[in-house]
Image (cartoon, rainbow, N blue to C red):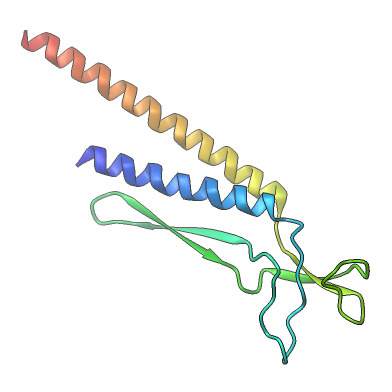
Amino acid sequence: LWPLLWMQRWQAQKQQLSASANNIANATTTGALPTPQSPASTVYKPLTVSYTALENGGVTANVTADENGFSPVYNPSDAYANAEGLVAAPNVDISQEIVNLMEAKTVFKANVNVLKTQDRMLGALLDLIK
């Protein structure tokens, strides 16, 4: 059971790491503002990760795109600019994404230390049995 819980936590942090990396990489990916005639936009939709605790003590991560995660920005030279010079720019908070990356790194390190401790404990137990 323990390796399954560790793997679930590792997968959840991996998804957070991936979402934050995507958000940072696409922070400047603009698109056309949605209109009643064309409600779809090509703007990057920032990813958010929510965690759900499982009954067995594990965790699962759910990654969703924020459909309203953009703001109109004045940039008349952009290829997606409308007649008023506005484009849709993603609402990506780079500082928050860096914090998310640092948190994921810390959790990865903690999980590795837990595995090392478990390995040492099992080794010590096997030494006692000999």
